[in-house]
Length: 319
Length: 321
Image 1 (tube, each protein chain N blue to C red):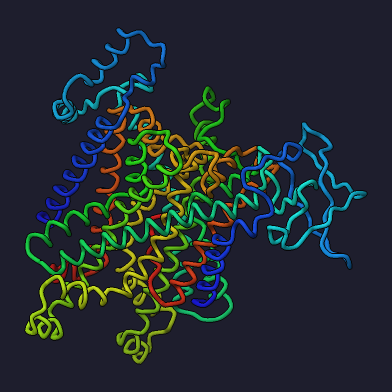
Image 2 (image 1 turned 180 degrees about the horizontal axis):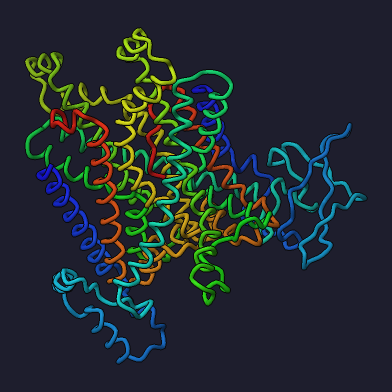
């Protein structure tokens, strides 16, 4: 189970890295003749892969049919792994959205923003959490008391409301790069207390061990003791926390973008794509718009497999 | 017991006060204020009147102080968006959220705990299947469950897609209104309950497995207690202890989850109201929502503590915390 989770996570990361190569189309290109087009079925014969392009039959009902008389050959390794020639109809593996953009390509490009944001925020939260928790556990006394009380307090609050409130009090319309930086900051701010509390506990008990006394006797200063000898003891704990924070942050981005407080609609992320899918009656006829939900599910599933497989408790009550 | 309750009440008070006043200050210090809601063509005197009405001309600290003084007398100020006192709005929304959360908690408990007892104490195909389903449900957070259920509902027409009441039900009688709400409730409640039920199942399963490996189980078996009786009468009660601790956290999860579910399924609850208020910088409505959220949280942790108290004789006798 653990291996399956690991393999799935690695595969997802690889897909995100190789997005420009794997995606058949540009994520922003609008194919005007293909608004809400259903997914293309790829067929294979002796001459290689091909598909029948779609033609709209009824604009009102958004009904498409395949043009059986005009098969389009697919090319391998022409800038993309698999695509149709530029002057040919596009290959829409997961259909098109309301602007006629290729959902599959947007999904791949979106994974870069969604995963990148979550990874950076996780790293930042771990860094703050380890530093603050380390100091609290090592110093003890009032510093410890104050830091622990504070992080306990933040932990009680439902994280999504804190994120929502912090995001909503910032200017609502920002360029994508600033949104990215802002969200990393907010997520790290909300995420660190979880890490700090665990790190504090580990450091506080490790502090009493003989090797620390020995180190101190040999003249190691507090900074060296903490950074070189004590913090490595929290490695296992940090790894678990990272696997729990990552999907939580992916979801937080999706939630924020879904409610319109995340990235602007033009930037492909899993959240903005779900936002495009927020019209119930449209989605009922174009279920492929829910593809980003499947992507989020896969990431969370991978993490759950990983965590369950290593026998750790799945306490992950926050989204 | 009295001292314990007093401490919890003090904590609750502190939580509500901190949360609501930081929400108020955050909203006040945020760029832009409620007057942008008046539109770009609002007359200057109208803007001035609105600023006056929401105390935006006073310093943030003075505003907070004034609000707190009035809040003690249960006057929580006016909402700009709804042009009504905040108190009534919050009461209504909180009621709706509570209905949703209690329904979800009931579903999650009734499904999760029995299934967890099964998977924690048995092996075989049935337990394996439950475990797999639960792992899948655990991986579909409320945002996705609500989208998915909405999709299914709109495809099949089994359940209404979103909202709490239909338009026709507003003028119908009281019983018709209740029926209508009951028809709208299952979708958001399920969306909220599925991931929670999976969490309960996993945790109960773990607690159960740990419990049946304890010495007292062998001792009971040796004295001739049947396996079934042992599970239901003894092992389950011991494993409940760790579940009680989870219940307090579950309230936080329900509040978090309910925001998304309320937003997606248009359930007129506290989360939705808070979102609207934050966007419009409707300052007193934000503070009121935050205060109510704090009350919910404090209530949750109190319930969890009391459950722990009831389930664990050691806590009751004050030996361990």
